[in-house]
Image: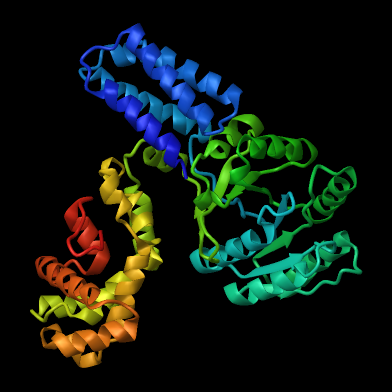
Amino acid sequence: MFDSLSERLRGTLRRVRGQGRLTEDNVRDALREVRMALLEADVALPVVREFVERVRERALGREVAASLTPGQALVKVVHDELVAVMGAAGAGLDLKTRAPAVVLMAGLQGSGKTTTTAKLARRLREREGRKVLVASCDVYRPAAIEQLRTLAAEVGAEFHPSDPSQDPVAIAAAAVDAARRRFVDVVILDTAGRLHIDAGMMDEIRRIHAQVHPVETLFVVDSMTGQDAANTARAFHEALPLTGVVLTKTDGDARGGAALSIRHITGCPIKFLGVGEKSAALEPFHPDRVASRILGMGDVLSLVEEAEQKVDKDKAARLAGKLAKGKGFDLADFRDQLEQMQRMGGLAGLLEKLPGAADLPAGVKGRIDDGEVRRMIAIIGSMTPHERRFPDVIRGSRKRRIAAGSGTQVQEVNRLLKQHSQMQKMMKKMGKKGGLAGLLRGRKGGFPPGLPF
């Protein structure tokens, strides 16, 4: 997300960052580039105009002129204004009400409401320890109810059964009553989508809203529709009291115009980003962190939070104890680290959160391949326990057998053994810090050796 916008903005700001003095001319030239970058990212024109004007006012004011490094001060101004456009602070769900708290999901057909319902249920259950019940009020789309039933089982949420012959308002009321009897904390209601703003369907969702009085009414929208996403959100907000927006499919959107337009146009905060198809691929939206990513400053806070959530602490503790006792970092340990990296979004996901990674040469970034990580895991999986523990025994015939078993070439086995050797040396130095999280902290944002790029 934001790939093209980020590249354009970084290039423009890099040209002014080193300048000792900013004039109206070079500020005007820089802002012309900023304006074009935002428009190409499909940011709504009113948002672009206001953003550029606010940056211009601050860039030519005393705040920047009096700075010892005015070029860098301008970068800070752009960062602050990006945060202001997207919302000053991350807005989570407000579930402070008598149980069960009701969350109503609304949106167009195909925006991803049903999968987002399941993702949100999983997040509330795993991160906040909430007991969650989900119900489908979509009696129009074939198999919508069964889809949610399957997803509910996958994420560990309770499911309230419904039937296409039922009235959606009655389904919603029955789900809330069932949740109250079962002492459920949160009810998430998945409603029917529509191809456009349909008067009859909007009346239906208003009646559901009036029946269950949700504490959160979330509009789920496909980010790849660009500024149309913001316009559709505004139309829904005029018909329904939305409390927030969930942007889906952001992993496939290189522009990011919707994220920069929605808050300004609707007044509704973006609360979550859907970043993939898996049920864990839902991230809270933090405007300050997103602004830092756009400008290539990284997002270390999100990286640390992911490490806390997704790194197996027991395995990390065992590895730390093993290294502290002087025992080697073997190939089984290496595989564990690679698998933890995959759980944290893979190499590409890690890279976009590391400061300075955005300025890596295109050739380096082009070599980043999560498929390579999967191949490395497969190669280690084709080894015997003895070979994983004692890599030095892996010679010619063993290499050929391992390559055949993993569907790779002997050269790839050799490369993995070399990368493991490099990682082994690093892990000896990081003995008491434990695994990938400690390795990243110790490198202070740098890249540990042994990674496949």
